[in-house]
Length: 269
Image (cartoon, rainbow, N blue to C red; front, side, top):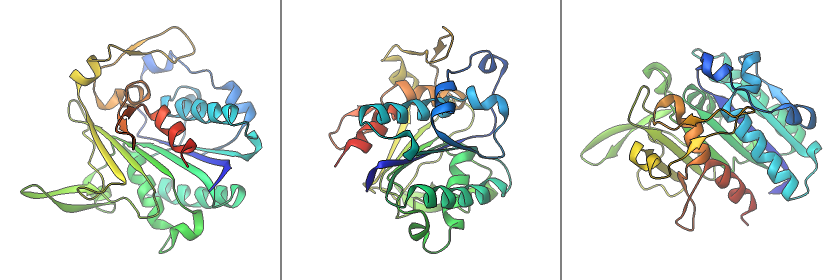
């Protein structure tokens, strides 16, 4: 792996921006000026500096760049959004190949996807053909947040697997993905699918519950202004929760936030 180079991808779910979200932007200007960012066509203008996953990934990678004295010229970002239909997955497959050609197959690669973005990411992998690793190299870290889509779309990237006394549909994680963290909830709105085969060590599923979130007594306050979002478990708030609440178990048996697990995975031998 060439750790001097990083390809970082963030795929939103269907647009959830409400008036309250639009009122509270993130400070993204530094990242826009410093890094090469590929904006996929489905991203709306307001989402560019109002999206939690975009901000969290950009700020995390920027922290890695500073800590490890990397050149910003060797960093590539792709920011997109999952949608109904096939346009997103086709474009993502093309963009992944284009950015890999620029940055190299051996670059450290991290993808963070939410809801429809999860399904479109997994479909993009399939569209790369029988040898996706030969086209884009290995994906070192895949973080999935409440992955969901209509049954017609899910069927392409899921499989019914034996779980307990019956079969349950789970997301299929390709072999060229080194580690996957799948973070889901079962409280309000869309409920994400579990991922990987039962017992598969390279896939970690974690169900986030309100009593677990309450035990940390935290709010999300990473906005450009002083606004604080109370953390209540729901599909809409999952991005903020996973950014500040430990929900990814590392090899040391301890739990870390998405931000921390990206840094730890990058730094690991």
